[in-house]
Length: 329
Image 1: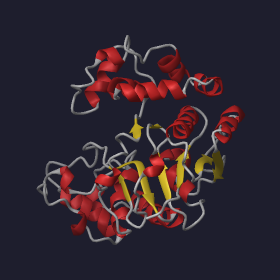
Image 2 (image 1 turned 120 degrees about the vertical axis):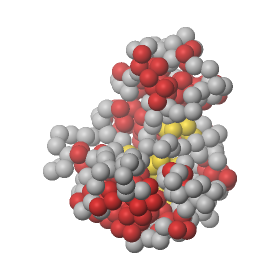
Image 3 (image 1 turned 180 degrees about the horizontal axis):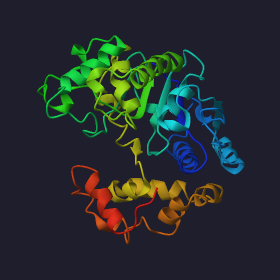
Image 4 (image 1 turned 90 degrees about the vertical axis):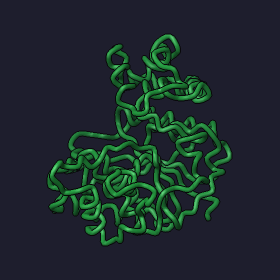
């Protein structure tokens, strides 16, 4: 167990910079005693990232004011063609042997996250996922064949990772995560394992994956085999606060207003209120409309749904918001 760890996110110009500012403000509000570093990785211009993905000066200054360290990193393997790979490119540039907890920027911290009981020798990741990958062909290969090919490519035994409480034909029998948060004791070792498997699957696709889409799922495809290979697995009850009382992975602000408890909405609007934060968030139009012009409040998005009786999947929620012309991200 480790009492001190780094929290890391990735940000760049546009939506992710606004989300990063909101994340940092919520972290400092909800966990004022956090003793680790908040590291904000920022991709740099280069051959795999034409144009300039860097954040503007005001956003960078706000992040530093909120206690963040900006970590510039090059794009060596993924870049603009697969921005989900940014998280792995960033981890490869972080100091070795220092425990980390990664979050997607579209996360709101709602409780004292520094009190988590994290075993960094046993990595894990978010279970807030749906049956998004793979799409099993009618005539094969089977679900087992597809996941076995991923684990075989990683050189990791799959059997110990299986949930025997579900049949082999059901998706939750297999280890599958959302990459919205994950942790380990060494960012560089984790990045090396993830990079090797992601690049291998992308550039030399196993036959069992021939009919599968790898975009945007590539990081989530590799994550189970990497975590299992590093001695980890499904999170235990000690991590229930993630995607629970301590964090909310909202994905898009309309979804947060549609689904989150009243307490979470109050936290969002409280941390977004200071003028210095407001100036940065309002520069991103969807945040301005949702938070400051009231489109997310009870009279708009939130009023469309009964938060105590939501659909079982996210798709109908998204579709309803879009029909009302209130979707923005």
